[in-house]
Image (cartoon, rainbow, N blue to C red; front, side):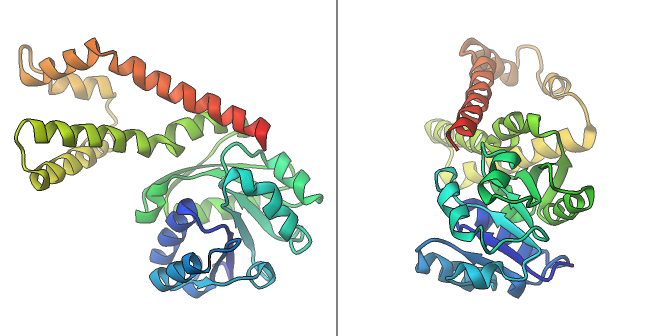
Length: 272
């Protein structure tokens, strides 16, 4: 069990992870989850009131004695944030980054010391314990420290170790992935309204359909093409819908979406 986990940055990703950790407290007690940000006191108070964690101003108090320090600010704020805390962080602490596009080597170089860095890419489903998180270790991190980070992220969903070279692909698939599904659900809700379904009924049906499809993929281990064909009767409603998606180049649009997110992740690496 960790005595203290510190979050530098209090945005949506930090909140998602904090929410998951606070709900599943077998690795760290809620009061020992610390968070700070640059200037938004109201946001800190909101997180403390909501999750029962310790949200305070002041890097010293947050970082002191923390076994894991989670960097969860916006990519553009990474350099300034590290400059503010670099003298407080020592090589016995593990720095965990959830920042898209920032390599472990780059982060260690910003600290100017051989600090162990674990690069991660969770997603916001961490808030309900369903994150898909990928992790890779930097040069100065040990396998034991990597496994500690894996254990931490397993409290908020699944965790898998990958080579850092795969992180751009991870970012474009699972990091950004939930938003793609939400975007599709938005479209389905609009379509439901146009065909006469009441919004509250449509919402429940769509949500459960998404959950059920995910569980079918996970539990049956069947290929998605097989599952699709199993419910696509010749001349039926599903075939009519699928044919329309194909005519609108749905798969090509999804592939282009993922590839553009992948490219943007690589661009962000050069910007940090």
